[in-house]
Length: 82
Image (tube, rainbow, N blue to C red; front, side, top):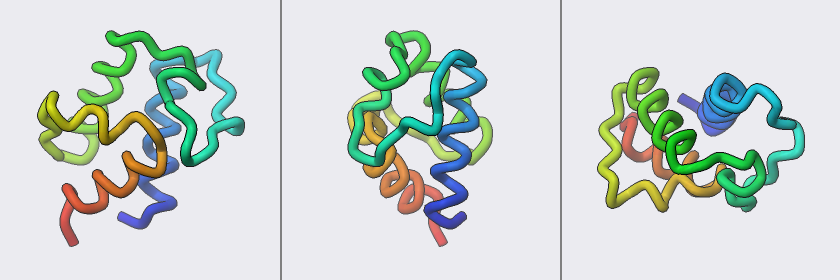
């Protein structure tokens, strides 16, 4: 997947979890939890949805690498492999 495809997927999944979210306002370095008002359950649902869609195992110790779009894209690109 390209970075743009990963970014689009993350935003799509956030849109499903938080339908009121203004996805266009997301900046790569913003904390997704703050920008989209995701509580811990919403964030956990995002991680599960990413796992389901990409088949990537994301250990809880790595959740902090998904807090921003920039870091999440980098993490998922590398976790997903070539």
